[in-house]
Image 1 (tube, rainbow, N blue to C red):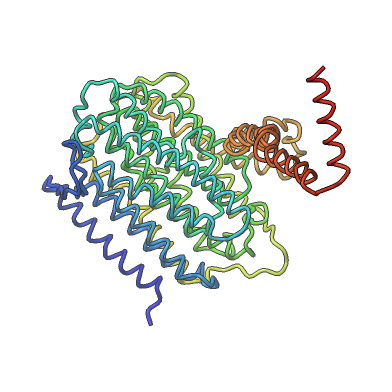
Image 2 (cartoon, rainbow, N blue to C red):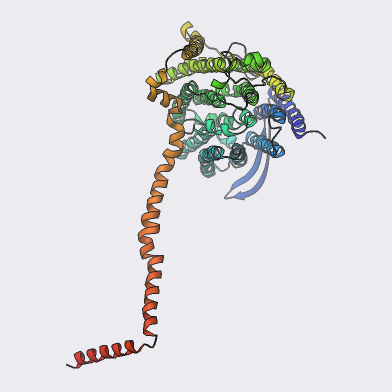
Length: 573
């Protein structure tokens, strides 16, 4: 019997190849297929199920399927001892299906099917390991994404004024009405929640409670890039609007905040999650500058980020399920293949020339430096680029090089073929993916004209960041704890600017506090005294008194007779 992970891998990889071939044919011929069937007509607006099959959707689908096939094959060994492995596989396939719905939908109503599906299945996957930490992380993920779902629902109601929900027909020439600004704002809000921009950043590192294969799939290629994909489709409508400026500032802050936080983090998976957050900030910021074709290279990012998560999973699997990088070190001697793949992914992430990350990241930075952005955004771009290399070198030092920090009894090796084969497949993508995409999507190169200082700036800050990242950690081993001297600054920087705290306790404290006050003072206080319990007490006491009168007691009769005599005496005289 063929294992489910193997059959799923074969099915998805064949689908991936078909989609990439179709994408190349569409790119060559310039064709696109638009399929629509009407479900019901409402006030001259028809609710229709719509699919768009163009080079963009095929390419995106191909990459999602390829990464999913590698992840499912990898799960065959990673989740080997799990009693519910088939359930896990079905959930991952449901996730891929939801992403597929999202990609091929040019209609806001049908896009909601995939959008909500992503949110729901991601919640189920985050709470896969059933413990309190996973439940909290899942709830934070689900509720953060619900904000985006509500924004999409409101956008659907606003689109009613356009006469239909196929946004591809309207984004090019939106009617110049008041609601269009609000509509674009709602779409940007929805994209920000899915792509975890400030102030919705807390859920992405929290979602690391999910199994590592889920992290490799969800937080590299699917869920987090759904927001980027939606904005690519909507980009013509955002031109010159206020939401673009707001998005630029928030996404620049996100990439800086995530880069800073990753330099203080010790959890291996959270460092990679924060690096994803930083790269998402880069993609969203360049979208806010109006360059819709540049973030499409996010697919190359998905390749090496999935590879990085897989390497992290292999390392965690070997080192007795530790995730603290201080417990690792010197792994390159024991896991040479994983170490090589991890270094490859790290170099691609830093934008090393001629690897996958270089073709997108370098061009994005140069185009951003050429654009009329303000000084704050420019500095945030430069600092975030330096910090990316800084935390990468820190990760390399703590996990791959450095001293071996595990105990005496260990068994660390690259023995698992099922886990290492997908890593080799994605390594090829991490080397050639960026160049191939750049040659396909940009047949005519961008004319980038800038001074030598700006041209070299990305390289200069990367080198400075790398040197600092490695040397500071060499220094940290034999140096007294500086972090205690600057404790408040370290805590602020390392906790994502208190974002997880503000997103959970900060939001709930007011509502839960006022709810408790209302319950104690109102529901269980005065309203109870004058409401249900008060009426009950009054009726019970009255009936008890009446009962006493009806007990045929001689004393009561004589007393009532005396009272009547007194009343008569007063009335007569």
